[in-house]
Image 1 (cartoon, rainbow, N blue to C red):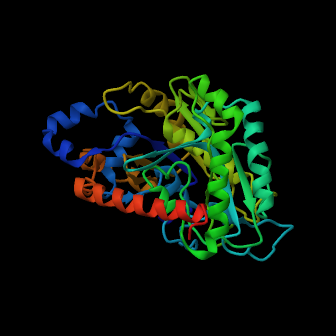
Image 2 (cartoon, rainbow, N blue to C red; image 1 turned 180 degrees about the horizontal axis):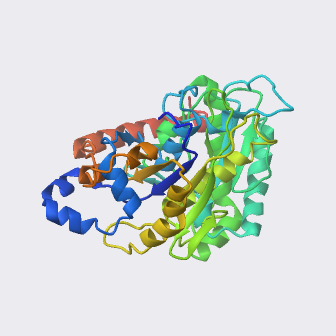
Length: 397
């Protein structure tokens, strides 16, 4: 995704794409009736743009995947599966040091890890009802083990903390939002270089399982804080542009998005998470003449829900943009990816094109998931790997 230099404004609409098969089953009148509530600015853009290419998130959280392509449009970040968010270097005026050694920084996220048949389920702390006392108790258990194995905290001990070690740990791990479904045995790399980290992590699991504060949480019906999820390690990479500013667009108005809330759309909460997390790496103003782009994230819950937010979007965001002659981008989100449309001065000259192309709202079908035989084979292999890990932990091999 190359970022248009003349369009520093983005309008994100979550849950707007529909499966292509469902869209094709609707007649033309039914399509027009179903999508009649869309803002005029979007309808015009759909009529006057060529069909956009669908961008697949490739197994990542959609906002994570979009932000990666936004910050790294030239694909400078090198990774096999998961982006190295802990190795991100932000250039500034006062400090232009060499890149950090690869695989020496990771984000550590507090959470609850549950092992299920098709992989692990990791619940991030934002939805776990974590008191300050519980958070402190968690780090009281974890920090001695980290220090014993050479890990330092580069940011305060909170929900998500930046960890570093002088000894590289060559592994790529998923973020809290992209982790679901990974097998635990894939998370615990069996290479010799990762052996010390692996033993530390398993010991940490035992200590947290036996911790009194977790027993008290479970007695209250709360999930335990039983894991420090390491993620974001890899090859160092740089950006020379600012993180975008994020604004929430709902029927209540347009506001700066400064914290995650229960009533916000998932996409908006993800934006808040990423901009705050990565913003903590930004010590000074970036060495760039570009100002931060602005992302307007619309609180749209999907078709069949309330479409009143589109009226406010049109009056409070789109009309002022058009009057000012500003170019901007639409990002239409689906379940597994997005499509990008450009709204600029060229579109205004195509006054003869007013019939929206409803195919723009179609999302390609994903390939079929694993069969029952695939799941059974993976489960059996996982059991064998788990036995090997247990044997190593107990010193039997």
